[in-house]
Length: 259
Ligand code: PEP
Image 1 (cartoon, rainbow, N blue to C red):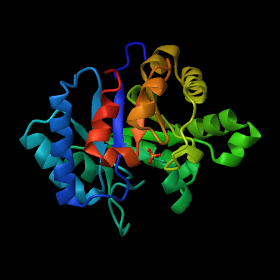
Image 2: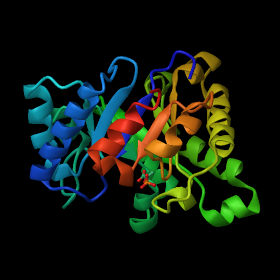
Image 3: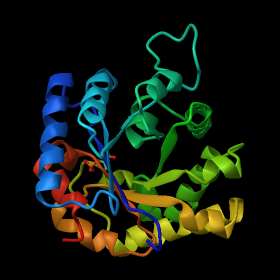
């Protein structure tokens, strides 16, 4: 991870209401501090449902917790007649640092295309949010052996008209769809292969210096038991964690992967 601060981001998906969210964040903070977590060395972020964000913000700001928070999605639009949508402007007001763009569940269940994901990445930047831009291949593509092409096509399409100044703060998450929520984790070598290819593509699209600074996360059934081997890979700079992130002890252990 040469000089890049690892990021552990917990995607809660559609779990935990705002009261449960407060409990989880408190427990996570206690558990991390109890284990003398070095917050400067490994950044920790939670990505709760929209309805939890205000409570999570209040707790993090009020108790000055060293945790970041963010959302799981945002609108391509900034305001107006878009019933049910949530603007990046509102997320920024709630103190969000991060927002997911292009999670595979959004691509699959809400038919988000690469063009929509690109519009969401740009919407995030318009409001000063850092997108955690998700890419990853389904099982058929992995079996056909064309996963690198698939992921790099998604990457390039999602970054159309994203400037170098914007991309300098980008976070990319490589999440093979066949590993998400399945308990089947990619091998550390598989994760490294794709994360390295993502970095090489960023160097082509922007510059080597920029690519060196961008954090590339792995996601897909990350747990305390498998995180260390994945994090030992040179081009893996953190994890996007789904299921295991709603268990505060498990997520804290993931964040302390170095111990
Ligand atoms: C995710 O939702 O981004 C994810 C990686 O889920 P899980 O950790 O449950 O596989």
